[in-house]
Image (cartoon, rainbow, N blue to C red; front, top):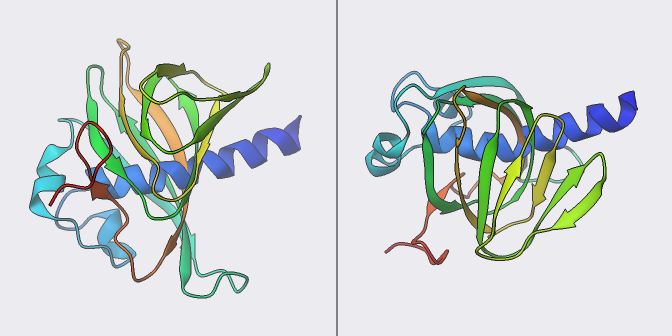
Length: 177
């Protein structure tokens, strides 16, 4: 059980890293620590009261030109994540609260204690503590906190260092121009 829980936590942290970069403040942010420039439109789109904590990052020898990042973020009750995608793989895990996740384009799967679930485009799924979510490059999505307490999520991302961490999309998952 401990090994599965640890793997799930690491995977979840990747997903959250991309989201964390989306929400991070413009100056003095965790995103700046890893060399990520956040466009003002993205920085101001984050929900009031969202916090982002950079836990760690590295450049794996097995994937040259990529970085792996681990973040913890907290989204306040009623907070929304705007539609976006990441150009790399993401894994996230819910530590506390509830996260409503909607797949807009691509593929994603939830790992729960009861087994894996493949998400359908356009269907909102609620993730609770212990649930993990994996999606690969270019999967567009949105998320929100439907609860009355902050949702805390760990995120791990594996991203090419020459790509932005987050790309805003429309409600259909198509990149904004």
